[in-house]
Length: 181
Image (cartoon, rainbow, N blue to C red; front, side, top):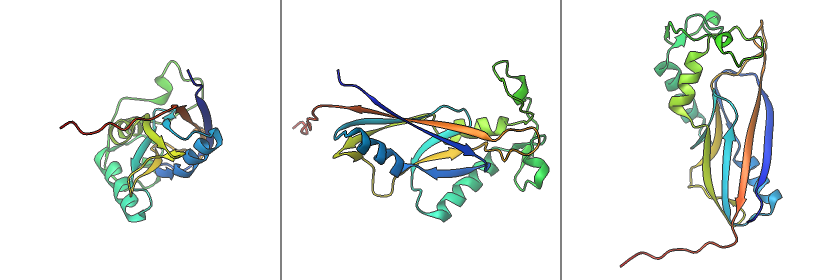
């Protein structure tokens, strides 16, 4: 069995909702691992940060997608975003970050909407083929992170420190199957 390769991307996430194109970083990791064929899995270690494969180069499309996600899943009226002149619909949720018994940080935000958006509009991980030393994508496809709960560090809400894993699994040989007649 061949070994797998792991590259971790670590970064602070200070903007609330945005796309971050990581296609080049994924291809750089594949090149660094010297893998010609196999699969790559991109995994986020967070519940409000997802991975998507879509058209990321067109800025108006990204604005439309973000606007849709924010309008579709209403913001909690108690969240810090709602107190800053939020222009999207709001509602009442019961979730509070500080109610999680596994939480070991000071976090006084109300981010149920961020969790719902991540579940609805992104994935915790994606797996893609690697051919000829790079990830195989369609003409308009790119790999992006979709953040729904970045924090600017104001008040008692800490800046989000994010970790995304790039797992690379090489294969020795790929056999193309022919169509059955």
